[in-house]
Length: 355
Image 1: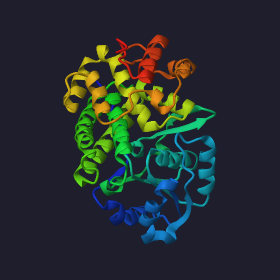
Image 2 (image 1 turned 135 degrees about the vertical axis):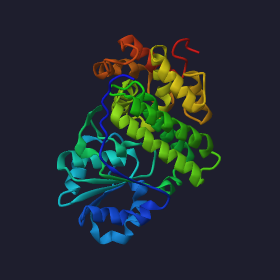
Image 3 (image 1 turned 30 degrees about the vertical axis):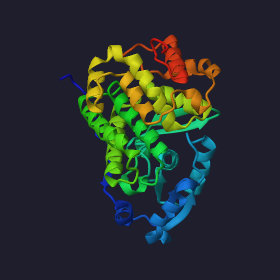
């Protein structure tokens, strides 16, 4: 056991089927909130409005202009909508949570988050903003939601393909926690357990998309994944995906699902313990191929080209990724290494053999 630092993050978690309806009003009371800004994407507006029915008189304003990767202009609009509010209530996926965080970053308003996907952002102090195709991320305790209400019933309407992509995005949080800059034995244990829950849920969600047990497994795994990522930090995989998402407006979860096996292949030779633990939790001994096959079996696109990225785009982002790559990545990060990862992820081929 080596010496380590573990920063336990503050926050209250309310987990259970039906809690969004039974506990939300009481959680607002804990903050004495009377002027709530409701943030939800247009696609989630009906669900959010229904949840707010018991305390509709406390919802002072609603912001629904949510967009992936939180463009700075969207953040400015959301902050304007928050004038006079005493709390931000976020109901939705990672982009919605990210918008709420953009508000909290400059206003200091507390956030109550009610996630409807498996993004995990709701338990991290990480924020992200995109300006002119360049995504900037940072860490600030002000953006960490004070309370998170996890209700598996809210994710039951999430389409199977998006459930799988979002679940694999959560899996990426777990995998990366093993080699991220602030990794430690506690975050690694949380990540390993998160992989087990996510693997169980992902293997059954296509067959039982309305199964409450399946959705509970996925949501619990997502919570553990976000918790591990929040402490361990952002590693090479997330640096790559953040640059790609900001530069080409690629869908967040699908991008993570496609890129992850290739980063694992890059780091595997120099991270044998991580590979063993990931494989054991996933139930596969043939990593990194097993992870890619796991995703393909679930219907993940083979390569980034399926998301609309051009092969010529690869060289335009290599330097940006290299500039923010962690210095202590298990395999030293070079321009050639990044190019190899991106080329394999774009084409959907094996990193080493081109298969």
